[in-house]
Length: 56
Image (cartoon, rainbow, N blue to C red; front, side):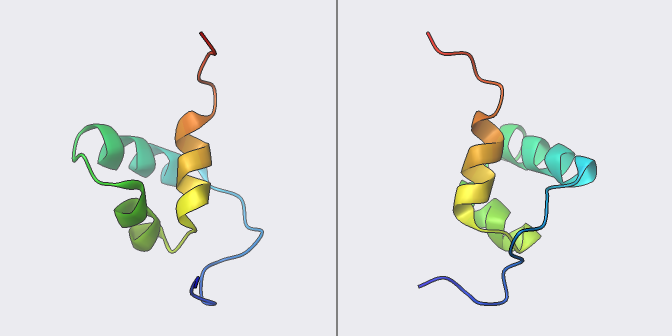
């Protein structure tokens, strides 16, 4: 069950995108860990990381 305190419907900011990228690439944090740090849904982080990926 998802925590009700997670922000709903709010867009990811540029600063948050930078943090997601840094934490994912440099610190090797999981999507769940990043989501907890930013108080976002795990799927939001997953979507953000997959944005712009080219299909092969």
